[in-house]
Every structure is written in structure tokens, then in C-alpha cells.
Image: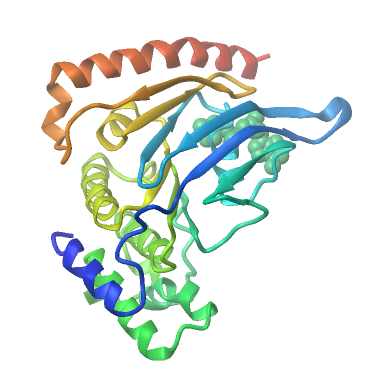
Length: 283
Ligand SMILES: Nc1ncnc2c1ncn2[C@@H]1O[C@H](COP(=O)(O)OP(=O)(O)OP(=O)(O)O)[C@@H](O)[C@H]1O
């Protein structure tokens, strides 16, 4: 991962973008999402507005079932808002698109394709020439430290390695926005910390906008410029906190007063909502 910057230079030379600077502006404009209709209607997200600047790293926290994934999916274009709209770089989102990469908790790789084939899948479908696919494959395999596993299959890799492939696969499409739904939730604590550090290196090298859903307050503070906290269902934004810790971040910042103060502020807000969510779900 230490070669991220030089690798992004190489990416520029093969037709990819070195940086998405200026791109990746997300506007969530009065978005409400209801599943079903009539008496079966379920209001998952209440009217929500967010303005996420190009290159910003935003984490979304909130109690289980409050609509975090649903909101993220509306930015990805998998879920259509019932009212309001999502606008990315002045274009209304009408469905998924290569400029918005998505990484899920479950690695969702193609099990029958090699690691290299998984990574170059998007650019191949987009019709990029063979020589470019070779270069993209080599670049991203190296970036996530998996060059030796180019010809392996997903089942032969650990969870952390598979998630690195998932991130590389999303980045291989040169997105301006990376949407991540609890991407490290299934990993052990140590691997999770390493993945967080790697993600920050990639983010700072690419200048990409990241929206990251997590349950983990420490993870959110370590990663984010901004933490958006959602209420119990139906979800709406109840806090939007700036993380002023300096960058580059290091794990030992977790013991600083600033970190602890922010952690306390997040927990205070989430606890009341989690109790409400628990009560709702047990009725
Ligand atoms: N496709 C769907 N059809 C009907 N209801 C749905 C659908 N997707 C999500 N929901 C409901 O919308 C609500 C919000 O779900 P969502 O997965 O967005 O919550 P979440 O905050 O991401 O939860 P968790 O933290 O537990 O992953 C839940 O009550 C869920 O059951």
C-alpha cells in the first residue's frame, strides 16, 4: 500500500484518472424512501438532505435498521427515492453508474473469475482495449498488495484479501465516488485496522469522495472528515459532526482528548436512538 501514489501516477499513464479532484459532489436533496404502499408502507428514510463536497470522507452512523444502507443505496442508484432526488456532479441519479463504485460487507466477487478478472471486469465491459486491461489489472493488484494472487480465485483468499479485491474492483472503473456499506464489518479487529489505514491511503491518493456506513464509532472517527448520525427508523439526520483530527490519521489518536470527546458526543446521540430502535423492533 505504500506505493499508492506512484501507482496512481501509473494509472494516469494508462488512461485512468490520477485524481477525481473537483468531481464527486453529492447532493441528497429532500430524499425520502418508502417501501411498499398503503397499509404495508414502510417509511425507511424521512426527508433527508446532505451536501457532500468533492473529496470529502463522510461516515454515516445510526442504530440498526434506521435506513443507513437504504440511503447509501439511493446514492448508488439501486433504490429510487419516493420523493426528492440525489444529484452527483449536477446529474440526477437514475440508476447505478460507473462513476459511483460500491463496496459491500459481503465481498460479492465473482467466484468463478480469477482475482485479476474480477478487478478488470468493469473496464472490460466498458470496452477498454486489452493492453489497457493488462495495465489496469497490474496496477490495482499491486495497489492492494495482491499481485501474487492474480490467478487465484476468491475462495482461495482470506476475508480481508477479498475485501481488498472488492475495493480494487470498484476503483478500477475510475469512480469519483466510493460508497461503502460496512465494508470491514466481517473482518477481525486487526485486519480491520489495517484496512482502515489502507483505505485512507487510497482515498488521499485518489482524491475520491467516500460515503462509508458503519456501526463502529471509533472507525467513523478514525476515517471521516464528517460524521452524519441518523435517528431510529424512519431515519433522518439528527447530527452532522465535523472531525477535526489532523491528517494523516494514526490509530494512537484514539487516546487523545479530541478523539474521546467526539466519541462521547457520537455515543450520546446514538444511544437514545438505539433504545428507540430496539423498542420499535421488539413490538
Ligand atoms: N427492499 C426493501 N423492502 C422493504 N423494506 C426494506 C427494504 N430494504 C430495507 N428495508 C427496511 O428499511 C429499513 C431500513 O433498512 P436499512 O437496511 O437501510 O437499515 P440500516 O440502518 O442499514 O440497518 P443495519 O445497520 O442493521 O444494517 C428496515 O426496516 C428494513 O427492514
